[in-house]
Amino acid sequence: MASTILKADNLKKHFHTSRGIVRAADGVSFAINKRETLGLVGESGSGKSTVAYTIIGIYRATSGDLVFKDQDITKESNKRPKALKQDIQIVFQDPGSSLNPRRSIRQIMELPLLVHNIVPRNEREDKIVDLLRMVELPADYMYKHPLAIGGGERQMVAIARALATNPSFIVLDEPTSALDVSVQAKIINLLMGLQNELDLTFLFITHDLSLMRNMATRVAIMYLGKICEIASTREFFSNPLHPYTKMLLSSIPVVSVEEEKLKPDKIVSTGEIPSPVNIPPGCSFHQRCPERMEICSRLDPFTVTPEPDHQVRCLLYPGASGVPLPKIQGGV
Image (cartoon, rainbow, N blue to C red; front, top):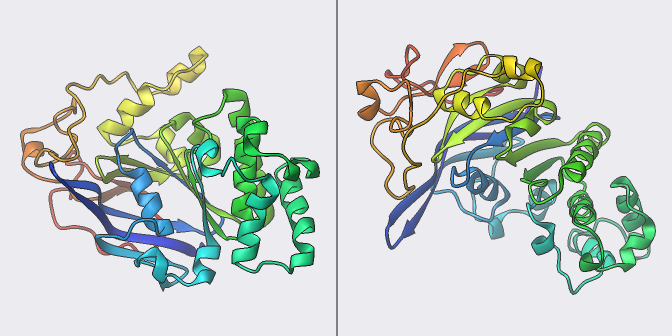
């Protein structure tokens, strides 16, 4: 039976601004099992990075629950024990800004080893060499600086730094979006290999659905702070349920007629993405939805499970206008 490593239950993170309250994450629930990859997908402003930063402790949750290995982690980052910070790591989107350009790769890699007392001082260099080789970089790279290497190599250093604390869970916040397509493939293959080798669990955040087919075990779609749909990758691509999901899948570029046949019929949305400060009442997607009904402007749907292990938040499905599901226990 799959073991749940991280569970978010009705997680909320709101920001108070001069223009009003931004509900960046507004009732997000999901669970991630050990050694799997949950792909969290959404357009810019959907709230996916806010979820990531709340998990790793950069933000404190407004409400809701976050449980990691049966431990409540819904706390400010400075109150988390070192062992927890060591076990949960993140790889940021842009290695150019996440790596200090004034420090050598050795200094960058040595810092987490020192902070978390991973190995004795006389063994740190050997550990850095092992970490660099793990991400397919030569040992002499430790003497270089970030600006002296390419973008893909900088991201490999960022991955190696995340691995330095021997974590079991890593948040990947769009780790390939700033890279060329050829380098993206290399990074994805590297991450998948490391996952198998080190028994890692990933939360993979991206706006690129095409990456999910091979990378993710399951896929969750976010829109304006809420999850629209969660399903296994196979089920997600073969049987999308939410109109927003269908719209996203129909817009994926393809290179062959066979791939085109697998896509949902082209769905054209109307209107603009609402401001996160002024989210419309009812279903937040209803103003753009080609399948909207009158009730969609009045009622915010609950999440239902119309197919096994396939959840959707949409009033097109029975039960979505009724009482919410019990608290999530595991799986999807």
